[in-house]
Image 1 (cartoon, rainbow, N blue to C red):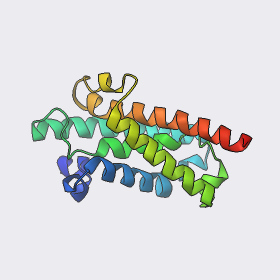
Image 2: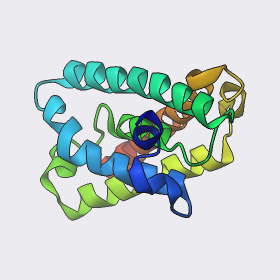
Image 3: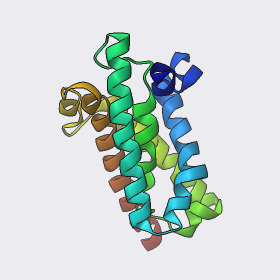
Image 4: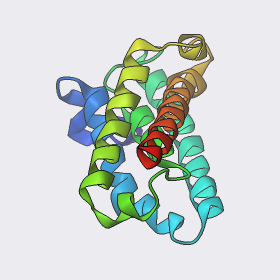
Length: 161
């Protein structure tokens, strides 16, 4: 049961499971996490943090069951990190209202996250060396933080231009 949850069911068996986990994370953000945002940024931060802690535990246990340090099929790490890309939403109601600009920034956030998750620049790779679920999830959390910062920078440029 834990492995099924940590692999997001059949998504962990598809080609490019990290991308599928990230896409599921965007859907999770769009359908669930935004409800926490409506109550205030601190609700979203607490909610996201609890989901990340759950991901650390489940991914660590699943990796131990599978017998690999960071099994590719375990894609809950991307799923739990993806909403952090949109934390402190840089485009305000545009991203929540389904505007073309909002959808563009949602797509940019997804692509930036995948870029940072795959290339692992600026110390992200070092986080993979942490033990168990920490190493599995925290590199994705840092990729999400970097994507978030770039997205905020782009949003500032968008408003200026």
